[in-house]
Length: 637
Image 1 (spheres, rainbow, N blue to C red):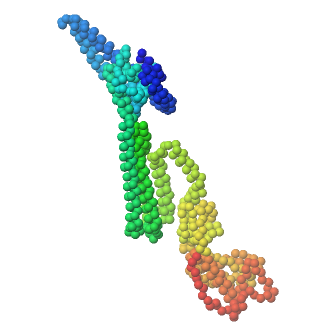
Image 2 (image 1 turned 180 degrees about the horizontal axis):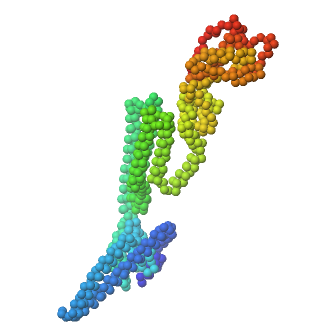
Image 3 (image 1 turned 60 degrees about the vertical axis):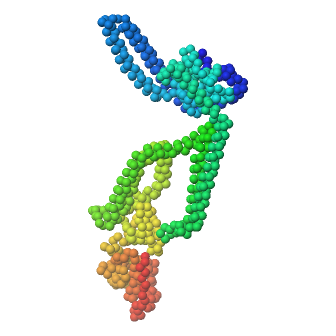
């Protein structure tokens, strides 16, 4: 019966074919194949199920088509028989001939549609391959009894593997035997495969023709597989292996010799080729270090070449023997798959890459335009009402930052892997880190922009920030740097400047003049007009005080024992204010002592009970002589 051959566990039939001499190899093979089948992945099971369903549906369509063809053929035969029995002038005969013509036309159209549909189904359903020795011998397209196409293909492969292991195999033992409505391909008493009408329908051939072709294919495949395990075949392959190893050794020897000669030539001509690497006046690499780097690079290239030769040779070595050919195929696949994947990825990524390049080029052109306009405004060549020149560069920096940020946002979807969950997760993580770690920096940047447009000071101004007084030497979006009168450089964050108050000594000194002021306390016994005159004369005699703007005196307090007089004088030299203050105090002392007026400090109280005056004796009336010395002026702040 057809179903009796298909059971892979039919040991009675196997025993009749091979005998006890091959029982244990067969048993071992069966166990190995069983373990391999148990280890198949669930994805293969799903794929086989889909393929089986497609093949069964196509087989059903082929049966329907064949039944329709047979029915149409029977109907046409009946009509032709009736036509032959009627006379040539009979009206009934003409009607039957017209009816036959209509049937043939409809049958032709129906056959064309059916054939087109069958071809479409065959293109989708490729069949289950039978490949017991690696290469596909033929394909199984339909089921037989309870066995699906995948089950039939697996059973045929197992049987062919068992037959190949039979040491007494004879190609003539594989024959084609008719079996009721089917045709069997058998080996001795073992049925290898049964060819049914459905199999013939798939191939558009007769069952006997299909079975004969399959039998010839099986004989040839088993003979080739056995030849590959013969002693002569193994010796020939060993010879090829030895030849490949010798060639490999010669190639590696040649590579090593080539690099040794290169090293010797470098040593001989190092003074000619090795000059070191200099960056302007800085020696980045001296000749000895440069030679060492070249040696290391040559050694790395040598190792890469040797590994590349070994990797390219290993597939040849493993491909010599059939039982290691799978390793060679895997090595080649491991090599070619990444290369194909990379090339395919680059090819598919080219449109996005061109889009990124266009966006980048447009952004760069806009940045250049912003730089040009900023430089023109900063130089005063381009004037905009209400827009100061010192706003140009900071504004340009902000606009460029926004342009680059916008460019990144637009480019981001075109980056490789930007739509993957990992890429998005890393982006979110980096964004959180940036937001947490840059809060103070961002506040300083915002404060820098606010300070820029507030214009409380500019480079070179002398200012006071809290308790710090100095000249502004640098101003950027993050910090402001000052140099004090003691040549100390102090860095102040912009956020601190924005939160505090700023005193600018320079901004109005050229137009209005900076007013320097100091206070002295004089007793009530001295007329205030005399004090005013002495203070004004002392201010006008001070170097650095403007002579075209008359100083003025304010009486700021009437204390218990003295009057507080404040002298106010104009100067344009705000950067010398400390020096001018010192000279002003010196002039006040000289003029008051010369005029015989005693200066009372805020904490000094003189009791006029006969005590001596605090005026130095040399300044007493009749004894004063102007000091004959020169003061060396240091104009450094």
